[in-house]
Length: 82
Image 1: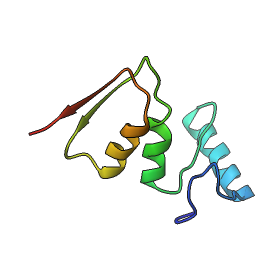
Image 2: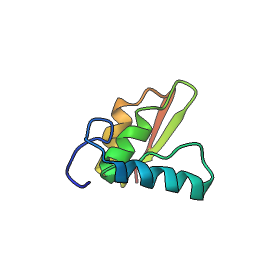
Image 3: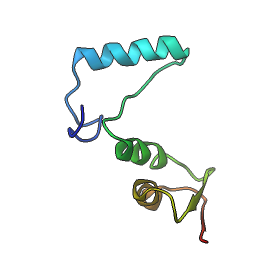
């Protein structure tokens, strides 16, 4: 699925749904969501942070983590610089 954009907006085939279901069974989780890239995964996870969450980041983190943190809604974002 590389290069197709965010999972929630990209066309998903039955193969993707079957893989998510198989992973959920293997990992014994309620559900599994596949992302097409690490950038999408970081954005998808961090954007869902809420007021009860905090993000602790470092200047050496990948740009996708720093960018996704900017769109998050946590109670605090702490940055560590060296």
